[in-house]
Image 1 (spheres, rainbow, N blue to C red):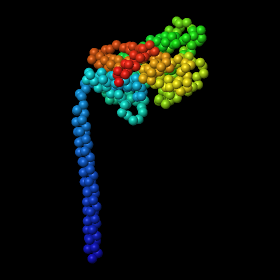
Image 2: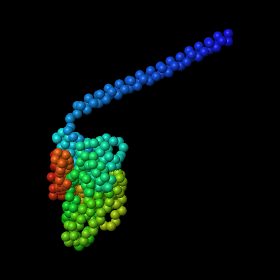
Image 3: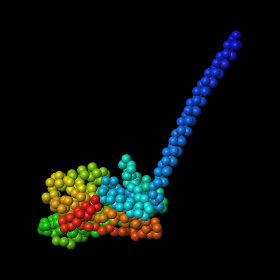
Image 4: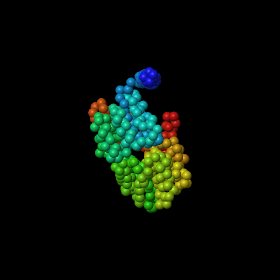
Length: 352
C-alpha cells in the first residue's frame, strides 16, 4: 500500500510539473507573439517613414548652418536667405539645433553637425579656442567650414563672409564725430559689445573708431563695455543696470548687435534717457527705423542679411566644386539716419 501511495504521489508531482511547464510555455509564446507584433509594427512604421522621405526633393548636398542665438532676427534672416539660395541649386541647408527643446552650447551644436557628416558647414563663430579646435576637427574630416559675421582667426576655416570690423569702426567714429555738437567739451562714448565678440574683432572696431576721432577736433573718450550674453534675460539685465547706474555723463551709446540694440533702446526709453544722450544702433528692426524717423534714435548701421546668406552659400559651393575660395569676402555696411530712413521703411513694407 505504501509503495502504491508513493507511486501515486510521484505521478501527481509529474502532472503538477507538466502544468507548471505548460504555463511557462504559454507565457513564452505570448511574449514571443508580442515581440513579433512589435517588430512588424516598427517595420511598417519605418516603411511609411521611408516612403514619406522619398517624396521630399532630391537634394544633391546638405549644408549645416549654425548660429549663436536662435532668437537673433538678423542671423535667422541670413539663414533663410542661405536656405532659399541653396534650394535653387539643389542643396539643403539645415539650421542645427532648431528642433531641439533643450539648450546646448555652440560647441555642442558644432559637434552634432560634424557627427551628421554634412557636405559643408556655415558657422557664426564665437572666436574661442574650443571652436577653432572643432573647426579643425571638421576640416580634418573633409567638411569645409565657412564663417559668417564673426570670424575664427587662426582656424582652418576656408572663408569668412562678413564686415570689415576696422572699416565698421571707422563708420561709427565718423558718426560719433558728427553727433558731437560741442567740440570744446570731452565727448564720452560707450560701445556695447557682447562678451562673445572675439578679441580680434573688438580691437579692430576700437582702432577703427579711434582712427577717425583722433583726426578730428575735440577730445574723445571711448570705452568698450562687454555685455554678458549667456541668455536674453541676462543680456537685458546687464544693459538695464548699466544705463540706470551710468552717472559718468555718457554722450553717445553705440550698440554693436541687434539684440543689444533692442535692449539698450528700450532701457533708454524706460529710464527717460534718450533726450540726454545720442544713440547709434545696429541692424534695421522696424522699431529702430521708426525711432530714427521720429528722432529718438540718431542712426543705425546695417548690413544686408540676404546678401550675406547668398554669398556664404556661394562661397561654400565654390570651395567644394573647385577646391579653393577667397579667404575673406567683405559685406557692405550702410548708415541709416534721418536722411534715408523713409526709403528703408518703404523697402521693408515692400518685402512684407
